Each structure stands twice: as C-alpha cells, then as structure tokens.
Amino acid sequence: MEAKTISATMDFIKSFFEGDASGHDYLHSLRVWGMALHLAEKEKVDKVFEIQMAALLHDTDDHKIGGDGVSFPKAAQWLKEVYVSDASAKLILEIISEVSFKGAQTQTPVSTPQSAIVQDADRLDAMGAIGVARAFAYGGKHNRPLYLPNEAAVMHESFNDYKKSQSSTLAHFPEKLLLLKDRINTASAKQIAENRHQYLATFLQTFMDEASVYEKYIPVE
Ligand code: ADP
Ligand code: NI
Image 1: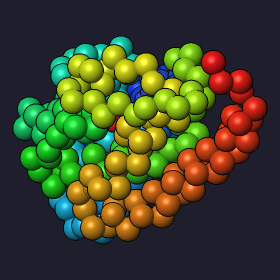
Image 2: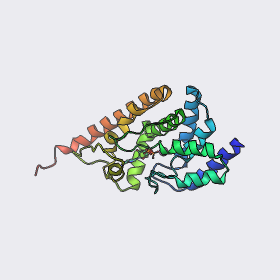
Image 3: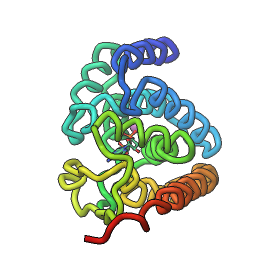
C-alpha cells in the first residue's frame, strides 16, 4: 500500500513540475526524496513513509512556486486523494512546513528527526555543482543578472523581506547558499555538506576572479 502511494505521488509530482525551468523541476523533488532516504538509513530514523512523502511533496506549495510558504493546501489535498491517514498527514505537513529557508537572519527550527532529515536533504540540493546549476536556473527564470559589481549582500531579517529579494544570483551565494553548511541538522548530512560547500566557495572565488579583470578599465565617474 505504502509503495503504491509513493509511486502515485511520484507520478503526481512529475506532472505538477512539468516544464519548470527554475531549478524546481521534478528531479529536484526526486533527489530530495533519495537523499532523505539515504539520510534516514544512516541516521536510523523511523517513519520513513512520512519522510518520503514529505520529501516528494515539499515544494508543491513553496512561495517561489506560487504558494504563500505558510499554508500547504496542494500537498494536503493530495494526501487526502491517496487516503493517507490523518496522523501520517499531520506529520507530513509539519515536515513540509519546516523545510524551507526563510532568510539569513531567520530561524528555521525542526520539531522532529523526520523534519531534520527532509530539511537537510533539500538544503544539500542547493549546494555543490547541482546547487550552482539550480541557482542560475532560478536567476534566469526570474530575470536576475548573473552578478552586479560591488553589490552588497542583504542578510534578510524576515521571511517577508527574503520573499521580496531581487538580488543577483551571485549575491544569493552569501545571502543563502554559503550559510547552509552551518544550518545542517544531522551528522550524516554535515559530512556531505562540507564537500558541497567547498565547491560553492571555489566556484564563487573563481567567478569573482574572472569578473574582476575588466573592472579596472571602467572609467571612474
Ligand atoms: P528552499 O525552500 O529552502 O529555498 P528550494 O528547494 O526551494 O529550497 O531551493 C531553492 C532553490 O532556488 C535553490 O537552489 C536556490 O539557489 C534557488 N534560489 C532561490 N532564491 C534564489 C535567488 N534569489 N537567486 C538565485 N537562486 C535562488
Ligand atoms: Ni526544494
């Protein structure tokens, strides 16, 4: 029964994210699902069904996809459609509500080990080579410049400010991506995050080095 529900949810997610070019395509949800399973195994955390369902459904109501980021009606509706029990649905929706990053100076606490795992899995997918690719896909989709010379990073103090952010994609690195390493919950994910963080930092440094060459020729006004 659970395997069938998961398989039906994968199909639902596949059609839900069809055509997305903002780094939130179906395979993002699938990678988060796979990483969450991997972390659950390593951390010996139970309620693996709820972890899998939350991982697959974690972005259907995201504020970047058209949701408000504080209510989760599409995920809730789907859980009803596939007859997930009230107790499981409650945990799944709680996990989903705790996944998302909400700004540099905003806390995102987790209430259960299951939440910790799905949050870690989602954050790992914003890091490393895939994280770089997703950031520029998002920036392109939202008409953001790759970078702006001398742009100051904005360390958002509230979820509302963060939602309204118009920063360049490169500014998103100090504003979010480089902070993720220190916001990982589980030991297993921390290990993976170290390498992925290193890759992000090297990418950023290389980008800045390449971009700096022309700057000395720009006339000072
Ligand atoms: P979260 O809900 O924690 O933001 P997501 O799975 O929705 O996690 O991932 C967000 C993705 O969108 C990341 O890969 C991130 O780089 C990208 N993203 C979000 N905001 C921006 C932005 N302002 N500029 C570039 N990329 C962004
Ligand atoms: Ni996500």
